[in-house]
View: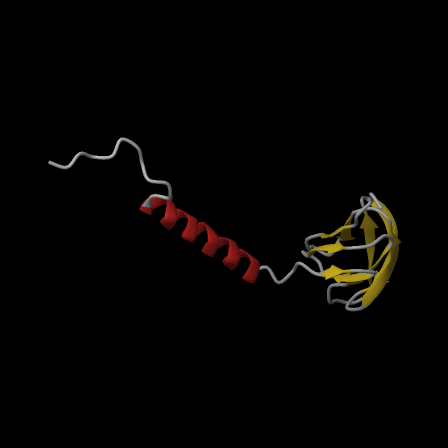
Length: 119
């Protein structure tokens, strides 16, 4: 008669292996389906709805303005940056800290730029 072992063998159970594989697939799908995560070293170009990161400070930020006619006001962390023409890629300046750029009255999502401020 064979006795069952008193301890489990090291290693993952079949359910844990399946869960690990599923989580890995979801993580890869999330990366593949997120085209709006631009990165840059000295400068970055973002569009409304993007979340980007810059690897240096200061970071020169350019913003792709939504289509339309006339101009839109842009704010960075709720402070007025300026008024810029619709449909253009505009230079917003160099930033030392992370910013949330909103295009006032355009009805588009803000763009976020993360800047390392501990250099």
